[in-house]
Image 1: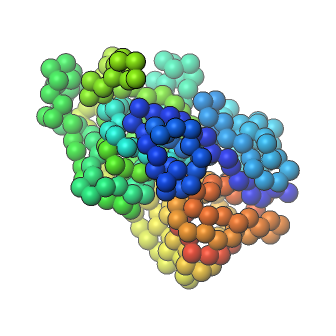
Image 2: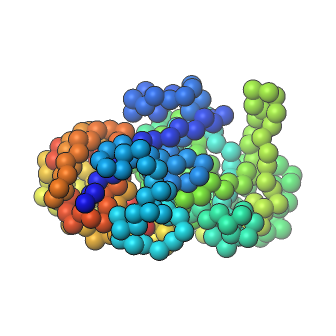
Length: 315
């Protein structure tokens, strides 16, 4: 019975990316403009493979199709979540994502994209764009077409350890000098609203998607800061960041030993600092900063030993 699946990340180059994924996590990145680590993903645009055990070399999407018992027979035609680490060396475009209904009709059956961000690190006085100030759709459209970006966009100061829940329809952008772990629906649909008139290596501006963005953006804004709660379990601190429609997200800070009795169908786990060992009834896996693994439905219990921080999520 396979209880732990360690995943091999996939890297995506972006105009706004840098080298922090290499410098901070020790990853082998494809270039000095590497923006995204797709850490746990079964999406066609980045399908992670298993690194350990009898399924080594198999893609996560294959396991979802052929070994659904690993995921407690959860229903669905695709693995539901995607974990990323983002290195925003420069500002990301201002963007918005559709919901499931809109994406299904307009994006060839793709899922919508509700996501959330845990700020691993950022420069001093870093900020992000999170929402907007328009009160009506007409005002929203007018401010976009007249380029009144400073009036339209809501900017929020951020610091390491902050968490933001970003439902579909939310105008948003990570800004320069930010390192983020993102938990999201398994979707790659993004509508760009504004890209600072940047050009790529060939002198071309990137495509905008204003018509779709205007259709899907929530107006007036409904952005709110999620409440989170923290409990102490022995030497471990467990923070619940989100318990929402598509996912729940937690931070586990372990100082010595923590034992978790599985309640969710399966867990997605990403190590953001430290090192240690994870043990189930039948398996032991050494883990360190930058490792990502799934606790499958075959495991009733997980014990973590070490000094280590993880971001943990489940559908």
